[in-house]
Image 1 (cartoon, helix red, strand yellow):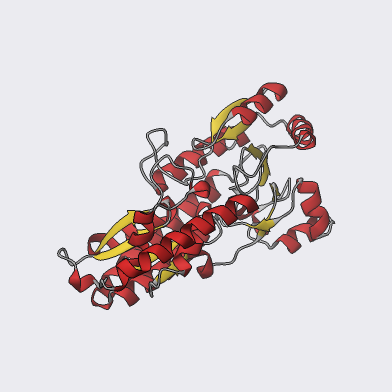
Image 2 (cartoon, one colour):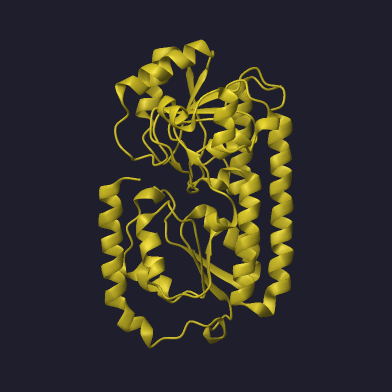
Length: 339
């Protein structure tokens, strides 16, 4: 994450919270006090909104802090949004994606908070994740295990990736990790609204089954492929790459707005693309595609969209998480020569 932005956004959120504590202190936020009787849930951005809506069903009213089409990493909270956080019955968020949200939630005073990454295991990822020529039996390994198979230390692996490795928050792009997060969200909603505990469990079980089916689709759909390596604009697909034995090579870092891409990284990617016959360079809809398109032109490759699913817009290839992930699978199959 950009340190300067993290400090400024956190400070803004903090000041907004302090200014609104007096306003919210006299109000109550229990579900029983609401006219429609629904649990008021605030989600930080789309992947968390999807979990809350699918698991909460008819018993929840979900509001996302991140508007469709907004790059979530750069979100700055308005005073109204900060007030909304403090009045929530439950919050569903993912630490490490939005510094302003992380800080505001700390000061919100809300008891029932589901922090999605706490329900699974995070890994250190750089711009390069996975092993070229890897197989599914190595998917899901730790960074240390991957480095051992490659014959290099973790530090050498990070250096070879072209950037300092850091904890990767993009768990939702791995259906298995996302299912683990879903189970945690279910427990949080049940704690906030015990009356509908059984319904939350039923909905969560159905979602987990849907995600396991998606996981199987990816395993089967990528099984017979000609290549393992894909190039994408932002390093969002590390968990997905590890899960299915692929190798992600990213132009930028974990944060799509983390700064300019070095010339040495571009040269490295040009050589890698030619060596591995990479025929597609992926970009995304919420960030500039310029560098990806330039790289593709340089190596004689096509461009396509690999959606990190940080928000759903009219440009999305699907209207929800599952349908967009299925579109991602088709894009990877085409790029990797999967039959």
